[in-house]
Length: 147
Image (cartoon, helix red, strand yellow):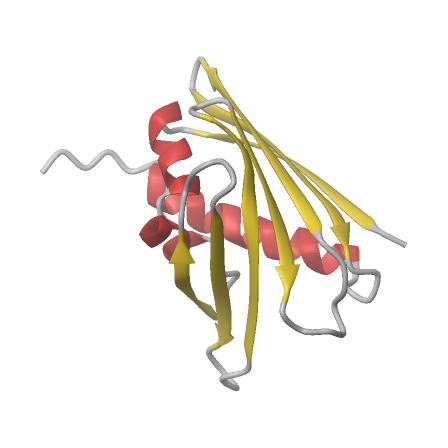
């Protein structure tokens, strides 16, 4: 059985900056790994039909989790849809992540949906991981640094 998580967040940052954080490989290594993990982008071809490979390494025990996927839909500053597939055969199936971006009075509204999460991953752990990642995303995109 597939699991789905739905998230909603408003960030005090311009739409273009938030979208860039989702599309720039270096930026993703800064914010996507949950607390206690280091991120690495092994390949990143950001275009519709392009693929990517990433990994997280647990800082405490050096255990590595890797996955890859394909960029399905890219509408700059509006919509991003991509697939995720874990390398671990114990985590079968392909997930789909859909992110909608909307400019609002105070910044950017995000609506995130992750579908097809392998049934052996507790959905509450996915929510926790995303919440931690979104905290790090806010720390990356919200500061106004003009130097």
